[in-house]
Amino acid sequence: MAMSQQSIHGQWSSRWTFILAATGAAVGLGNIWKFPYLTGVHGGSAFVLVYIVCVAALGIPLMMAEILIGRRGRYTPVNTMKILAEESGAGPWWQSVGWLGTLAGMLILSYYSVIGGWTLAYVFKSATGAFRGVTGASAHTMFEAFVGNPWAILFWHTVFMIMTMMVVAKGVQGGIEKAVQFLMPALFVLLLLLLGYATTTGFFFDGLAFLFTPDVSRLSGTSMLTAMGQAFFSLSIGMGTIMIYGSYVPKGTSIAGTSIAIAGCDTAVALIAGMAIFPIVFANGMEPGAGPSLIFETLPVAFGHMTGGLIFGFLFFVLLLIAAWTSSISLIEPAVTLCIERYDMTRASASLWCGISTWALGIGTVVSFNVWADRTVFGMTFFDLLDFLTSNLMLPVGGILIASFAGWVMAPETSRSELDIRHPLGYTLWHLLIRYVAPFAVTLVLLHALGLL
Ligand code: PFF
Image 1: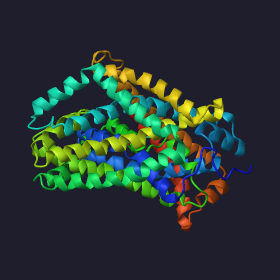
Image 2 (image 1 turned 45 degrees about the vertical axis):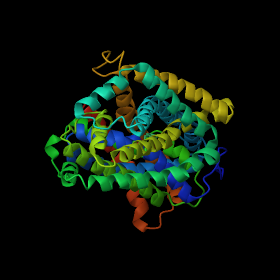
Image 3 (image 1 turned 30 degrees about the vertical axis):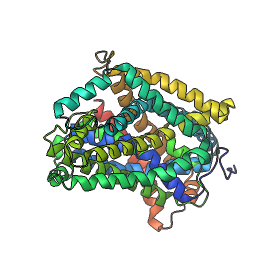
Image 4 (image 1 turned 120 degrees about the vertical axis):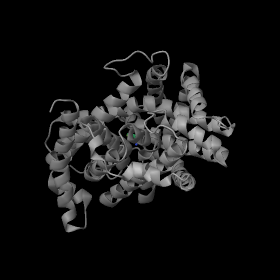
């Protein structure tokens, strides 16, 4: 079947815009909020090592598979999977990969927007000098008082969601492209500035040692699954986001080169964030394993005491807000394009309805930090459960299915011609990783962590 040359939803104006947009989707709260806190909770360097191995051996080949599937199909993941399955003579049930990913995107965005809202609130707190002179105890009290008030975090969640939907409603070229073109470079500059500060704390090498001195003894099945889930989450793979961004890629773009560039930038940002945050944590005698509150409790103390802390703190939270915003845009894109293709909606009304339903689900996360804080299922709050369900189950399962589809269902001639890798061994290596390593390794880690193996 002849595939269309361009998606009905638009096309990136160049390869560079695609790299910026996909890096914008990849780099987000996952790199700056979640990576450091998970690294802290799971003991540091061993977690980092598994994370890096997962990015290189599973993440890059999977990202290539998603881009190639998206570019060949040119539709929303549900329809793309259906069309490509037909093309390969496989059953229509492969479209469930698209449904799973689209659902995962909305579930993730429902809580992502709440944390994005905290970030927005902290931009204002930092700008008004709220961190001046705070101690560990008072920063903790400030954070607890903030998240303890459901109305306050509901308000910021709402503002963040409106920001997201405003960009999404404008579409690929009008919205996403314009937004990332100036937001992404600004993000890099701000991050380097923060790293520069970290080198002056006197604890820079303690931070490095924590991140990079190997200590495999601290690695459990759960932390391996978490590191793998975090690699998927951080690269935005396993759920169709990259597939849909891939569907806007012009023909002739090198998929391998682009994937390596995106994964490289994403990993660099996470590591730089870690290298910037942990020295500040150690210099102020704080707890690296504080959990989701890590940056919201420890950084204000650091910023409250350092010279120029008002401006550094403000810049940091602006940086985090930008990163969260560009990622949240991509989380909802599969759902929005699905409504346009399947239910014939306009982009504006699709954005509105997807936005409202995701916002409503987010109320569950809002209350799980206060009125529902004691309500748990399997020992997890609503927020913990959503995070576990999406990062540790849905994304890895999506990854297994996408890898199996690209490695076993798609004809090798098709993937070879789409990838068009120049190096003679390049395609063979990719095919090996996507056919054998990715599906089996992800299944093993998943079963082991769930106690089924
Ligand atoms: N990769 C984003 C982050 O690290 O914050 C989160 C994310 C965005 C996950 C888009 C999945 C996705 F499809």
